[in-house]
Length: 241
Image (cartoon, rainbow, N blue to C red; front, side, top):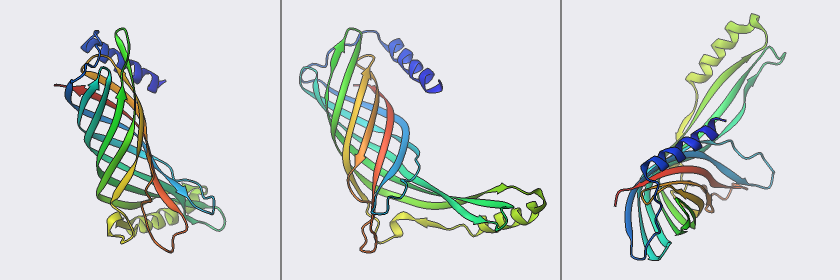
């Protein structure tokens, strides 16, 4: 229900900006700003059929540029910041008598400068426009880190002090590492973007899409699986030229 209300609010905002959705004319050049959020995770291509990691919040924003080659057909490029990553859950400690359990969450966040390049076609529907898009993207990793946190699942209150002391000790010793300090981690990310834009005017567009990464984040002879980015997103773009 919240997502539905948010989507309706975005549509209302765009309609308020302008109720006159015009065609994209041949030769039009536009510059805009874009920002959005979504869900990012990793696809694990491994021979053990292990569960794929859980997602973390993806955020992104930057500049976009587009040029119409013919009426309603245009190429759009962006220079954006993106945060991608994933998290995994496990058991850090389990008491032999099930008095308590300490759950472990490991989270990897990676920061990229990304350049998507998509071909867009605008379908005009009166005061509204649909804009399907597709094309490649490339990203360069700037920084990234992996952190571990622990939470207590207490079954027997008589063990609370022991459990909390162990929890504090594990948190104090929680490992943290930088992704690109690993000699096998690659900074280059490459894949394909697919999306559908909803144009409220010549200046406002809301896009939902998916980035399919095809490059393995890690390259090592002792790894039997591959990790590739997978990102769902929604962005709001405002063109000022």
